[in-house]
Amino acid sequence: MKITRKRLSLIIESLLSESKHGEKYICPKCGHEHKEEPGEKCANCGHKYDDPWQGKEWVKPKAKVNEKKDMTCPAATTDISVNTANRDRARKLDWIMYGPLNVEEPGNYWERIADKWNTLVEAAKKSNCGNCVAFDRSPKMVDECIPAITTEPVADEFGVLGYCWMHHFKCHSARTCNTWAAGGPIKTDQSSNEWMKRNREGATNKSPLDQKMYKDDTA
Image 1 (cartoon, rainbow, N blue to C red):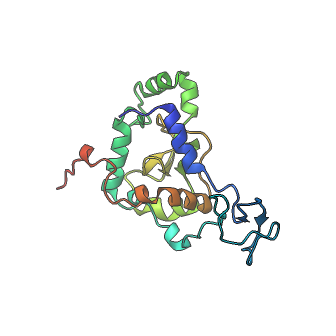
Image 2 (cartoon, one colour; image 1 turned 45 degrees about the horizontal axis):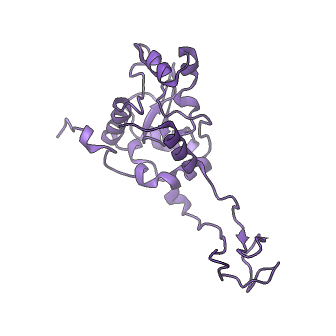
Image 3 (cartoon, rainbow, N blue to C red; image 1 turned 135 degrees about the horizontal axis):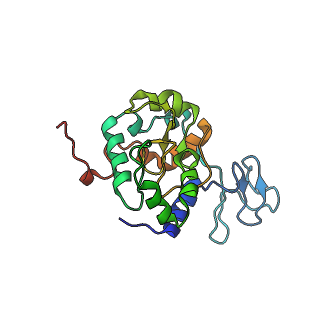
């Protein structure tokens, strides 16, 4: 399965995008921004509230999502089979290439990833999960979600576990993948909530992302 850098960039930008106008009400006729819901009309031009203008609707704040629901732990942090399957998918697919499998004995992994990025091994090692934009180390994730069930320590001499919002599994800060993007890690519950809002379907899916690649050896 292949993905272009351009397409990957668009996916990441889509995940990170937020409303330009935040919590404001904006008149479609004159563009006036109201901090509170207008009465019957726009305070600036008098255009009737809720009426469109030349096909454009009023811009309104997004409905707030229930905070408790928003903080639900991703399925991979509570179900070892989902976590393992999604991690193995990320490891096997060439366009993701998560690794190295063994941090202490990386083999030629860093050479391979450096070749993909057309850079030096030293530079590749600096672009790891620990500073990826999708690496979640928020208090909620660290204290309540990740410890629920782990196949490795939450922290060791090489780094720490976090949750990957791109590929939905618990990843290690000392590893990386071909879809690494600068800007991380995620450090606040608020930011973690935003990622959950945008990725709820994938995060709460109780089945592996690619069931064809996964065989349950315990069945």
